[in-house]
Image (cartoon, rainbow, N blue to C red; front, side, top):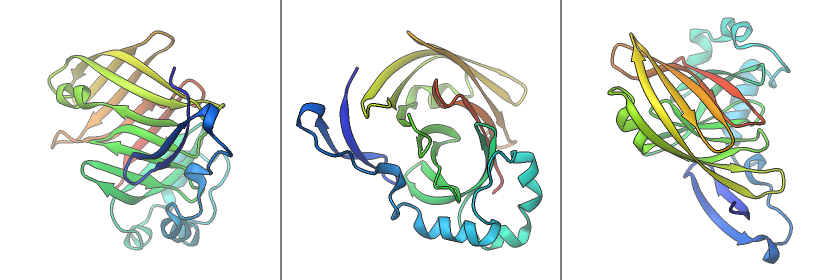
Length: 215
């Protein structure tokens, strides 16, 4: 286990500072800083109101109109995490990684449709190494992914998973096994072979989230 106090830049996916617990002072506010995604959050709140509690993604779908999309720049996701649906707008891009945020300041970063980080959920997925997975997404086979997860004590747990990828039609299944957990992610591909929708494991406390690319 690697234990550190950290302040992260969600847009870049990089750790700005990381110090040993013994040398640390007060924890930083991290993903809930007002500066992170402020303009996007205010735009979403103005268009659809503050994030509702436990409203499913299906219930929110009717709010995703051409008029709403015209007011948002970049990509847009419809997500559901812990039973709560949300419209997520693009807040930044760093190479292949796109960061999204909703009106409640919950954030998620994806690379080629694969979740590589979350913010604002508690016990967040800080980063995930998925290069091996990306290389085998369409060919299948065995891949290794490494997840770095924040704990309730502001430590970071690094876990390696061995994953088997298989494809049936336009659905790719990723079955992963690690020392303390196992999970199965599913990805639906569009005609261009890009991930259009998915159900992905975000961690032992959060469980699964679903993500659908609207634009």
